[in-house]
Image (cartoon, rainbow, N blue to C red; front, side, top):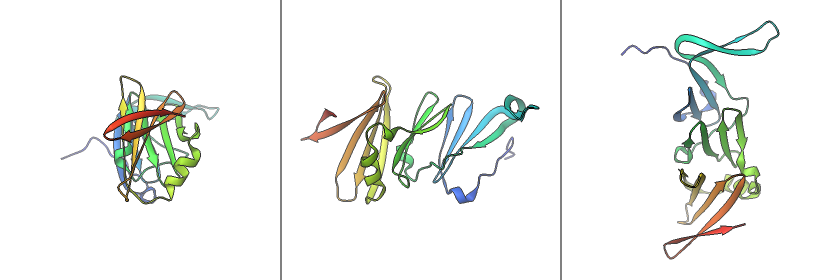
Length: 173
């Protein structure tokens, strides 16, 4: 097997948890870092030092590690919708939305203390999905004590979900 070209990622950023294609960008999410690899594009700087994106003959063009140190150890929390990728950074206790404009901790929309508490909790797993019909990121935290907590994010707002005898009930906060 002879690959088209390859890029080495920094080992200090941890293991690769997931690779997602978001538009023309390959997003590589490691334990402590997210790196964008531009497909068929390179970055050059002009005389003023501004970065410009140009076409490249290489399959993997520019490599752009995020300036933020967000990543995840929970690959099942990683969900893509169009050009956005969402995931839980358990080390920092935040939910991150990675978009073409960069990364933003969407847990800041009213759930800071909830996710900070999860940072220190004994978590068995964290898994998520994206509800295309309602435009919602749904995340469930599975504690080691057989307890689960589900939250829904939509339009800069979080809702909690309670499970009562097998039925889900949305609790708007």
